[in-house]
Amino acid sequence: MWGKWIFLTAFQTRSIAALSGKPLLAKIIDDLEKAKDPNTILKYKLYCVHDNTIMSLMTTLGVKAVLPGYISDFNFELFKTDTNDYQVKVRFNGKPLAIPGCDGNVCTLAELTKK
Image (cartoon, rainbow, N blue to C red; front, side, top):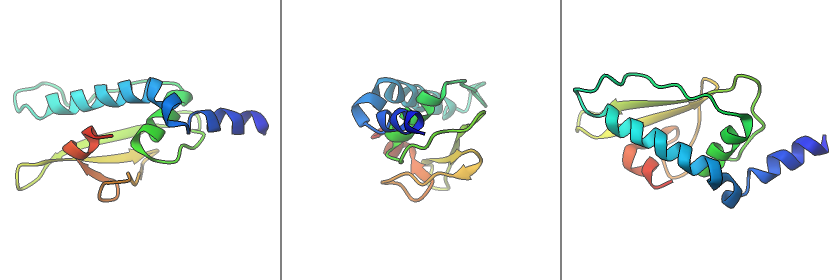
């Protein structure tokens, strides 16, 4: 029990989480920016990462990190609004993930970039 708690607590520290969470989020945002181009062939991208990277990404997004189960997943979906803005819906293990500073699990791409 203590091993899991210590492991989880380490990745709830923003400075530790930033080591792997920030670069991964930056890459995801870069891919979302590329997906805005109507001529892109990019439709879906899959990253495979370890549990510590998932916890780091959660902390980077401002969400309380949880110990992810086996084959846990994040899903970032890009949508163009009627006003030509872009929104990103974030899900963790198929469930909406409320991101602080956003409208529930929906962030504008600009809001997500500030994380």
